[in-house]
Image (cartoon, rainbow, N blue to C red; front, side, top):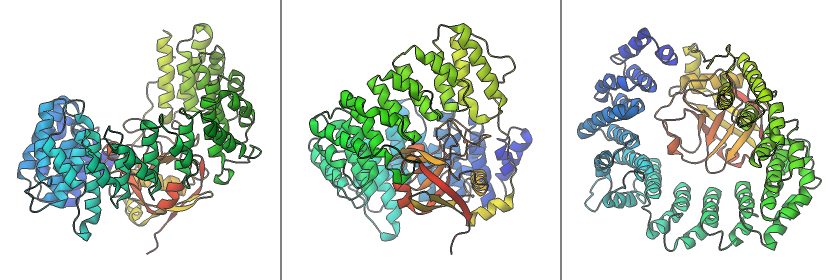
Length: 634
């Protein structure tokens, strides 16, 4: 079945194998078959899954509900899935399975208010209310998960009923038995997220949220405080002084969005925050209108504090982040002062600092520096400089973009192709684009797809033909499934050693994502990740790394297929970065917070077993010294 799934069941024989699995006597194999069919995302197979919704085994029924949701593509598929899940919700007695049905019903992409109202009525019936006597925790967890997903789409079509909002408010502060603590925490988080998404947070709700023990609820409360609610400023101020850095970060984000025009004082205070992510956000916010003398002096001091401005390598000890961010912020609020300090950042030994210098140069319209940086040794610096020239519609952008077409970096190629699409000198541009397309296609890498598409789009805009010999896609191949190795991964850890930070361990999930777990473990054992960086750090969201080019578009090929499943993108889970279905290129990301909006879209294949505090401290450019494949300590 794994082989058939990995091949995307493209043949009738493969599909027959999966269908046969649905009736196997072993419930674990029935569950695997259901999951595999769901991952095909074929609405014509929803009827095939209906019997599994009533399977004698609860785990199979849970998997079937999720699989039906994955298969719901197009209006007809959504309608079919909704009908079958609604029927199941009316007869399902097991709270876990009912919760899975409710969660799936909530995430289907509806297009009418009538559908939303009907589904909401089914899901919300288990919410706590004035007449509630007993709470079924498992059913309520699925219901709040479904309502959170429903709330994210409901605003465009309808709105949640007042009775539902009342039930969600009760769920957002629900307490219970100690053995249910984890589930209760998730219920409170989903309920708070749903209230925030639907505009259902009140001032008492904000005050209750910021007072909760669960830091994640306090963080989400800071997001909810962006709604225009009387008294919210006092709640946000409490968040700015919270003991948890993620809460402070979210509070600062909200202050910047809602109150920065009235006072920059909390932002100036946050520049000195002990957490680097909070401090860097404060520096960035100073560039969004805090142009007073104290703000300018603070930014100048941060830049001057970089000493000579020259370091040997982008290590945590170099401390380049604050000065680099300050350079961009100063360029926005005090251009004349920034102009004096820009040259040494342009010459900095650390390429990330030069990349930020290109961004600052764009703010300053410093075209000589942009042109200099467009010839940088590192392609990410070139790409930032070219982007600045394009933004200002500079004539030299065409020459720089033509030169960029000869470079190996796919992100740079994408920016160059887009820069050349409106070019007028077609005699020079078209042959260069055609040659670049031939070269990149000849490399035979799936991961060049976005670059190839960008070049094709540029040629189409220019009314020029593609080279006849270039295919539209390369396509990966199904992998072999060494079951013994996959089974062994259940007792294997991946130990990441981060330069200057410490160690964190990942526990793989081969039962949920066998192909992904095997692929990443194999690459780790071969040393693929050694020396690479975490190039993308988005506080209160994810850190992402594993790119040889330190950007989104350079990865390992061929593409990996998705293994989307029931595991939610909770804080500490690890996923595979993609840019569309089945486009994983071995770049991984770690969730810093609960991110349910990523569920059912991105594969989860591991979780942080130890060292989450190290993950939280990682900054842009931090180096993965090495990854060890080890057995866990018992």
